[in-house]
Length: 67
Image (tube, rainbow, N blue to C red):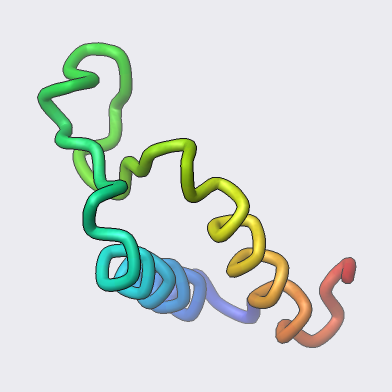
């Protein structure tokens, strides 16, 4: 991505899509307290395929990406 700001916006957009489409797959942060440094955007492995699909589509849309 051209800038970090654009990358953060894209990341937040992807998380929003995941939250709306798979609310049951969000893992509460207290479940992993002490194991991870993140406080949000933790999802069940059940949607790993969807996460990869979204990331692949995002990469393909970026000019000069490796895709």
